[in-house]
Amino acid sequence: MKIRRLTILMFAALITLGISVLPSDLRADETADLARASQNPVANMISLPLQNNTSFGVGPGDDVQNVLNIQPVIPIGLSKNWNLITRTIAPVIYQPELVPGSGSEFGLGDINATVFFSPAKPGKLIWGVGPVFSFPTATDDILGTDKWSAGPSVIGLTIQGPWVIGGLVSNLWSFAGDDDRADVNQLLFQYFINYNLPQGWYLSSAPIITANWEAESGNQWTIPFGGGVGKIFKIGKQPMNAQAQAFYNVEKPDSGPDWSLRLQLQFLFPK
Image (cartoon, rainbow, N blue to C red; front, side):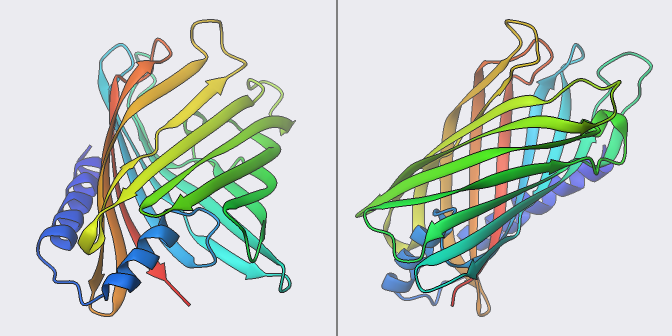
């Protein structure tokens, strides 16, 4: 619990510092370019998002779950026409006690990796397609699936003036792992709507909708609704992107959270 609280306080302090105190020496055009690139999941730019998700009202005890996602994004130029974009998610999880006597756990969850093939010079529609993988790296059974899983992933977006609008969809199926654990068949859909404002500020809504097809009817979907605000700024010479979003789950499994808070700090490495 102390680790979870420390993580939340750290991200809150960093975001507050970044968007409220530090001056930005970014030019207006540079700020706008960085904002659009940071909102494009297949941009040709290395970045390191640290995304902290705190979920409230989890389980019968209305507990708090915390997941810190470490999400490096590394683009690789395959040719003058094609890029390969690697997106990895390593979740560090605090899981509260959901079943009496099971105890709480803190550790690494299953690592997820996506590889997108994307045009190096896209038109009005920016897109990427490729495989997504999930590896059984969890340090405890309740933090992961103990399954090897894979599936397809597709992303598409458009940038129109101050708007960056798009969506990502993927589905994972398990193909190996512990036979005593439940199979994996899970859909993920994330739409994102960003409206960029002057001086690096922007409004954003990017909820993650999931469906667990292996769950019983009525417990398959998690559908959040909400959004928040973000800002592009610098710490010294390092460009950064900070944002905060809150989501209410209009549909959720019986043990799912009522709402969640997402705080993200992203290191940007433009070319």
